[in-house]
Length: 277
Image 1 (cartoon, rainbow, N blue to C red):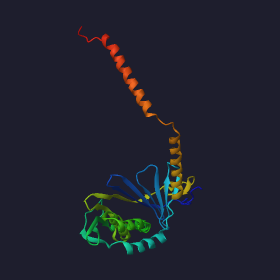
Image 2 (image 1 turned 180 degrees about the horizontal axis):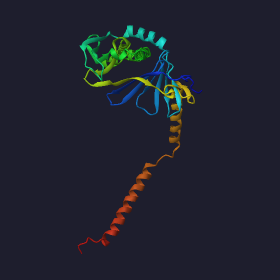
Image 3 (image 1 turned 60 degrees about the vertical axis):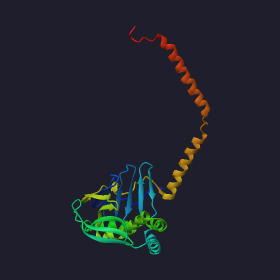
Image 4 (image 1 turned 180 degrees about the vertical axis):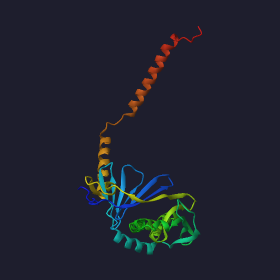
């Protein structure tokens, strides 16, 4: 089935580009316009395209020539997540610490993400000015709605602080549209894990950059996993069909080769001149 979602019938409007860097020095770029957003995370082989109204999200994989439908269920996932959160997740607080530094041209407010008032997860430097742009605010709200935090919350109830902090990060996403986007995130050890390096507006996007390739096959995540599984299965069958290597025979061949080299060196030695005769 070919991908038909996001096929443009009119020019794409101008929007905003947000660029950032993570703790591994990997750069990413988010391109946002009125109705959709594209996330490039540094891989030449794929990017993510999101419908801001519905929350539908697709991965475009150029290496495979496919579009993967993430089958977003925003309307139900929020209710499920909230129900699980109320029963299993300790209280998460975004505690204001005061004014933060100006980061890449944007004033920030310093917040600390705490669990139960005692577990320090991270420090977030939020900029309200950065979400004054309605396009950015719409994107931040869509990302918060689409956060799949249920698994993190369940893991948090079963394991330790690290899992709880991952769940807390999903929960505080809901506050970014009102308080500002995180210009910088710092973990409890003081390492910068994410920083927005620039916000550029207005930017005009090419139509093909903000639409799905119409000639790519459309697959669900399950179908993509099955395809990879079948490919790995075929590869394993090829490996299994290869003749079994007789290691004793290989070792014997190596011993015979080493002996021939010794014999050759022994025969040549009497005829070698040292240069001092």
